[in-house]
Length: 69
Image (spheres, one colour):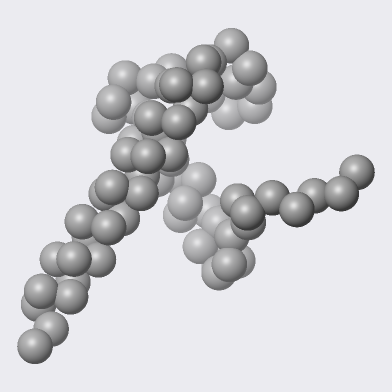
């Protein structure tokens, strides 16, 4: 099977932190994400977790950039 997914982690050292962040975000927004199989979740729920992760990462980067002059 050819895996051309764009969902690869570019900084391998960040894998564990991103996994932890994913579960923190899911918990924060009330999506019952669990270790292992999550096929019972809707695509909307999964998309919401990913979208909210991106939003929070952008906000963190903006705060960091605002602190640099």
